[in-house]
Length: 281
Image 1 (tube, one colour):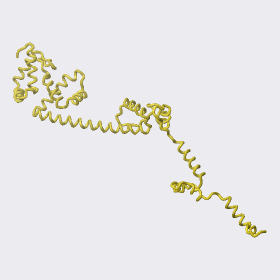
Image 2 (cartoon, rainbow, N blue to C red; image 1 turned 120 degrees about the vertical axis):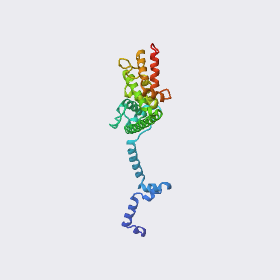
Image 3 (cartoon, rainbow, N blue to C red; image 1 turned 135 degrees about the horizontal axis):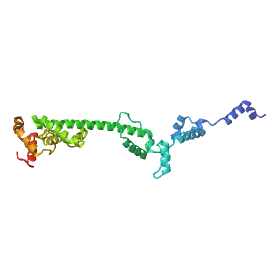
Image 4 (tube, one colour; image 1 turned 135 degrees about the vertical axis):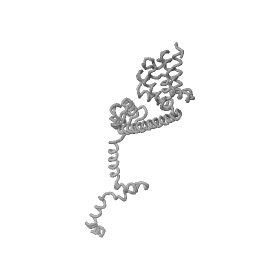
């Protein structure tokens, strides 16, 4: 046996075999990675290219399960698939909106709104949020508008009373008389009077009704029956005029009213018009 051969002992053979069959050194793998990505690879714990491939396959399977592809313009089928993936209902009526039970909701409008939501592609959750916010806003807006209207009406009534002065109660009574004699017989009620007030304001409404009321005093016929607008006969008008001439309190109110537009003046003018149709006072 040569000296070189003698040096190759069984232990040395075992060591060499172990080195040859050993897996690749991880430090050798990391050196194959671009320097700028080595920290990222080390953080992930990848020791070989097989580790990277396995990680990518897992990532793709996870993303693929919930992946939503945005459709391009004009892609009808893609749009359908996208909406289905997002949970948009097939038809607008399938939106099950939960609205407050104490809210005043216009069901016809809700139906229209569902159509808008469906056209926009809202998910059920998005539609619910929009509906709830709308109900909340409309309730606040309605309450605010009602409060503002009430405050405006109060201010106008104060203006009316200030302008009318000590004849305020008389004008109010005349307005009530006009409504009682003329409005109710034709089917008007409190809601209608509220609409009139809302349309032209409380001040003008009071003046309007008090004017008509002064032109339509009740119980003006000689026989004691109740008259209405233009309901005086010439004889009844003459009788009423004679009665008023002897009413000192009525005459005093008419004299104090320099505007010429108070109930007494209006009544007198109406009586004059009635008597002009056939009887002289």
